[in-house]
Amino acid sequence: MPVSNTRSPRGPMLAMRALRHRNFRLFFFGQGVSLIGTWMQSVATSWLVFRMTHSEFMLGLVAFAGQIPAFLISPFAGVLGDRLSRHRIIIAVQVLAMAQAFILAGITLAGAIQVWHIIILSLFLGIINAFEMPARQAFVIEMLEDKSDLGNAIALNSGLFNGSRMIGPSIAGIIMAFAGEGLCFLINGISYGAALAALLLMNIPRRNTEERRTRLLSELKDGLAYAFGFRPIRDLLITVAFMSLVAMSFPVLLPVFAGSVLHGGAHIYGFLVASSGAGALAGVAFLAMRKSVLGLGRVITIALVLFGSGLVAFSFSHSAALSISILAPVGFGMIAVMASCNTMVQTIVDEDKRGRVMSFYVMVFMGGAPLGSLLAGSVSSAIGAPYTVCIGGMVCVLGAIVFALRLPSLRTLIRPIYRKMGIIPEVAIGIQTAEELRKPPEYSGN
Image (tube, rainbow, N blue to C red):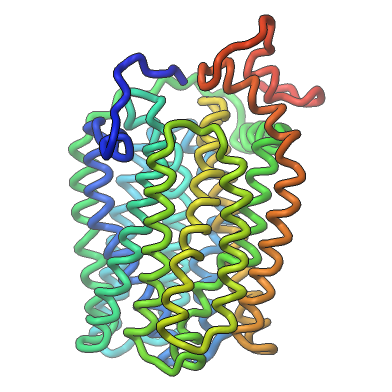
């Protein structure tokens, strides 16, 4: 990943510098429209299930159905992402996601929707996302002519996701109050048109890939040994998995907080989700203004503490205004951890294994969530949503302490790689290559 020799942007342009690249600019605005629709559908689906069943367990089950495919399928999708055109994979799955949204809208608007329909369609969308997310994560660097803008592009991509998370639920809350959930699903289906148009307008250079003669399972095993054999990548993936399992499931319980704890309706639920999205957007702005990946380990530690302590405070609140306010720093901490881990992994990963490593990232991120969703739903049914969220927050704070203790040794392993890449000055002669540093003694790649 070469360091750019061009003059570095300053001021506000520093935070938006990845938009200099035409392909990324198309992606950014096309996905911006589509993700607003995606969040509208996500919020409407959760509220529809809660309205129909008033069951915390069913909320967890629907979330599980939509997320478990990422845990089971993403690693194989990552191998395909290293073999095939990631651009074409993303186009294909966007078409399938559009079809899913229109089917869900049709059944709901016809008044025939049942919970088992939602579970099946959520499972179908989960399979689609299992192929789309690893390809999209690995595709970011292909849209950049200047690879030194990768960290900024990842931050902007996270900002896009969380900015739409702030806008989409607010719109969905209003639409659900006056027209019902079906219209939200229909708007989401239409919004995929913007993403598809942007993807088709891109001019993506043909990616050089070696002819693959090994079997899929062999490549998967090789990628697994690489990702979990190099301690910095392994620890970052474990941090994402841990956070996803114990605390990322709190959005599943937000309808319960909105309806049963805060005694509100769909509009309160929408504001809770939007507040978390606003905090995440602030976190993205903070990360986008950073000039380098240096110091992200410290950011992860502090953000984990902020996220966990925020969840504990939220669990004790019985005021709608206070709860909405608390979720802003929670969202900040959440995105700071996830985006920082993503940036660090993508910075040190070998290009020929990028798809597989990012599939493992998606696997632990999305794979931990369904287990956490089921766990949250089950535990909440037994002890209540507030205590469930409180426990998750406390465990996150403990995780931050563990990560902080491991951070010095991780820096020792990563810094020579940063020197080799030119991120920090070379201070010694004879430093090992990045490949030598990434491979433990027992690992031998193909």
